Length: 108
Image (cartoon, rainbow, N blue to C red; front, side, top):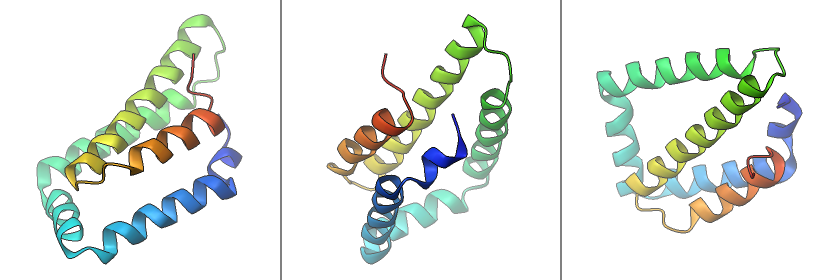
């Protein structure tokens, strides 16, 4: 996984559209702000971020490391989809899955 995959125009456009959609809807924005204001949510997001960063930057290319990296990518994708579901965005997961599986090599 390289940082360049995140800078792909399609990934950036998807992120921008999703963010605009959330921020322009007062109900969705309220739900996101409520989640991010909960101390337990912030602590869990922090630990997920640290664990994911560490796991994705392991330089080993053995079978277990590759399996771990794919598992982390899939789990992060699931978390993003869960956040979309929490703010009642039913079609956004399609585009997020498409972009992630195409550009981040999550399939298989």
